Image (cartoon, rainbow, N blue to C red):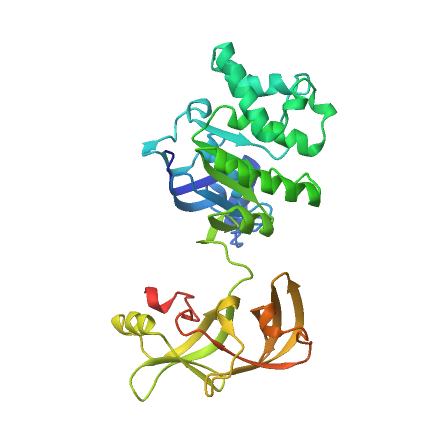
Amino acid sequence: MATLSLRHVQKIYPMRDEDKAEQKKRRKRGEEVAKRSPSNLKITDEGVVAVDDFNLEIADKEFIVIVGPSGCGKSTTMRMIAGLEDITRGEIYLNGRLINDVEPRDRDIAMVFQNYALYPHMTVRQNLEFPLDLRNMPKDEMDRKVEWAAEVLGITPYLNRRPRALSGGQRQRVAIGRAIVRDPQVLLMDEPLSNLDAKLRNQMRAEIIKLRKSLNATFIYVTHDQTEAMTLGDRIVIMRDGDVQQIGTPGMPQMNFFDGQLVKTDAGTYAVRIGEAQIELSDDKQRNLAERGIAPQRVVVGARPEHITLEDKPGSMIEGVIDVTEMMGSSVHLHVSVAGQDCIIIVPRLELGSAGIESGTTVRFTLAPNTVHVFDPDTEQNLECL
């Protein structure tokens, strides 16, 4: 069992003395002091805020993916969990035990780095044995664990080779093997596939999915690749400029948003109006909005692409023009222009027939009443969750 809890975790890199002196001078001159670093991270009197108020509860054996652009704080978060970076504020708990001051080697957490970090003078077997040797593990048990990891990752034929004689994919397997041979409670993977070509990345993603079934570990995986995030993660944490923007289950492509109005019908029920279309909400949503006393108002209406249907329902139809069609195996992604806004609709290929549908075609569609989301346009909060 391995649960992990990050509570109000913050990482601030102190400013250099010369930067502090420069800020002091600027204050004396009455000039505005920069509140953002060149990478758009926040700057306080303490320094540059690399990670700010990170909160996450991770369940046993869950696969969490942290995704975001370079410099957003995802690798820093990973290194704080591993104990390779000190935490400025906040707490990290492993199975309910506070581990802020626990040495990395005592955390029962293993990490796979982006650059493999293999010892070039050692053979593959010696690289796999190294973390076990540090624990003074008996030779027979060490051999058993090394053979198991090599078998799981398909690197048994390479145990007597040195890293320079291996391909990129084989080296990455060795790096993963060195992490899993310890049988850690938590396995951290920091952009492990970024140095591989597209074909190898696809193969290694499949290997990681199979690996997960072989281990009793909780996974935390860092990437900037959206495909990796969607393929691997049970939940995805999106970071930007040191802040957590969103946490949720995979969904692809993103939700569609429409400018609209929340209205009350003559029967006293809630509906959303988008242009000339009016869609009455489901019973659950009616109850949620009524319990919170939500008044009719301007709103942003959200609908996922798979919850939009091409059907004729008088009074509830939205009209748009197809800009682009993408064939995605058993489904088609329609990019539709609606009042100047881009909307994506996912349609099963069988529903379109053999003729398909062409760009420039006008289509009419509606939203599923039980899946519509209604947001405040200013606070961006879901009105059902206030």
